Length: 114
Length: 163
Ligand SMILES: Nc1ncnc2c1ncn2[C@@H]1O[C@H](COP(=O)(O)OP(=O)(O)OP(=O)(O)O)[C@@H](O)[C@H]1O
Ligand SMILES: [Mg+2]
Image (tube, rainbow over all chains, first blue to last red; front, top):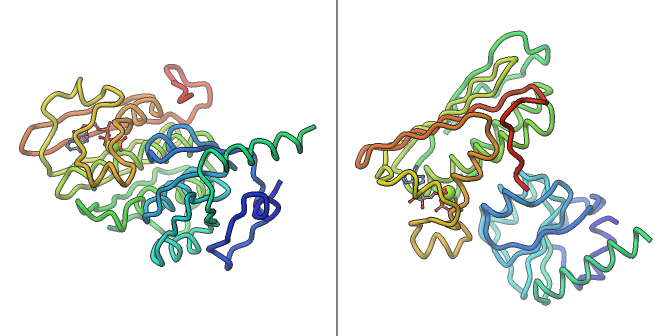
């Protein structure tokens, strides 16, 4: 499943329209602790977080996640989005909680496997 | 920062590659620049993905600790056909009790740094887990030096998994 296919499912708004959303989402990881993401997120995961500052882009890029979903209606600032575009990391925002987003993502990824 | 060899690299990897990055303490806006550049150097050398992954994690955590705790530091790397060696040396407060600092969950990061999602006390354990050799040395009031070796052989001994 690609990020593009998930946008609607997650009620998300794409904050990096410059970037392609055709990246394959292989799984998900939920965490607001950056060293935890460094340790446990996998390549191709969609990272669900409420962090919005600039450093999330470096973490996402080093871990080669497929993208970032920022929850609870939070919005990263222009600096973060600019960096995300430079690094090729799509960022989405959604009004839902991490719990809700993880649940929807889990359901859709597993439904796809059946 | 910079000073890294950014130039086009030869994939045959017959010689050694080395370079360094200057890290400015407190400059969160540039966090990850050194690690990201080193990662692309490793990739351009055609180094195996899993090795690049481990080196990137270890380097990034070292870079972050300099930014969070120290005044300034240097991150050096030496890439040979056998290994990737990363040395992070800083001028900073040093670490009083290294054994304690190495424990997962121990952190002295201030509240505002924790709000950013740093300070979970996982950085040093992450560095150790992702390297085949890990050395740390620190003098209170002077600084800290971390040296990490990641062997490029796929089935190296003493390799630890991070899951
Ligand atoms: N370069 C350094 N200079 C001074 N103190 C350090 C340095 N690196 C680590 N420390 C000390 O060791 C503690 C543990 O470091 P570690 O990287 O494991 O976790 P952290 O930085 O607190 O949190 P995280 O890495 O999860 O964001 C730090 O809180 C700090 O007290
Ligand atoms: Mg740390």
